[in-house]
Length: 357
Image (tube, rainbow, N blue to C red):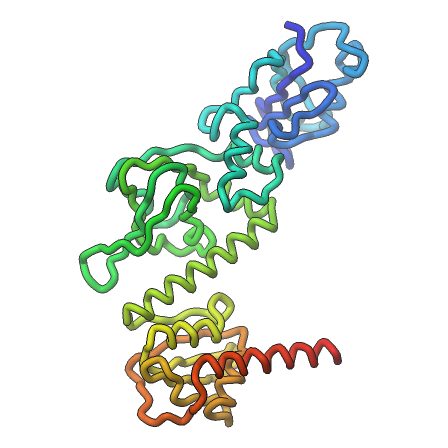
């Protein structure tokens, strides 16, 4: 068979820092097909080209046949299977990949919001790792309290995120549709899955194992930052629901949910009680609410509005809301929005002064 399109597939490797068994390099001589190649080793390609009778630029004088190739490593070389394929035939992806047409796979992954910014070569490698799953109506995808072992994207259909709240009756927290993702929270935090996720009707999913998801983040810092922001947004949304529903447990870390957001959430939910903030330097501040309005605040020797403004600037520490401590005297005359605006103005001013100095 005469062909200038060749697949170099890893049959065996022992400690190679680049390749794993099954990885492929696809050559469309004299080019490397980066869209279809998982990873590329220039030294191995150079060794392969040395075995040809002529440079690919001058035309092949003999068919490129099937066989095997060892990489240039002097010890423990990687063993490749060499397969020549028809130019008209698409390179088949191994079983379990997204699709067998890698060009279409890359285009489809780019239509999913969370993957849209990734370059084609990275999407090609991702496509080789993603598997497809089908679930029927009511079938459990993730179970609350169990460790998360995969990241999912809804391909077709809808899934329901369920929680049991304070009763034995489960309720739907949110519904996810095609293009939405879930499962990253447990992988990123190491905590058990926080809620049941089940299929609503027939559902098609893309799934990425925990190991491959972690590789995705390590190989692409942009995606790591993107998922960190997504996790923070979901934590904020989850805490907002907790506050709205009046549950007792409302706490978190300022690195994830800052004080301005916490104050805004408590005000919007018209909650009564005391927000306790503790810094890692053992400082402690309090903001007391009545029906969503700030009635009092304390931090060191500061009280009232000045204590609120100082607390709004905190970036590290823990917070917890105690609904049992409700203030009776209104010592803060400014509304929540005015407090937040003035607090943000002071923070911006302090940052400008620090930059100027």
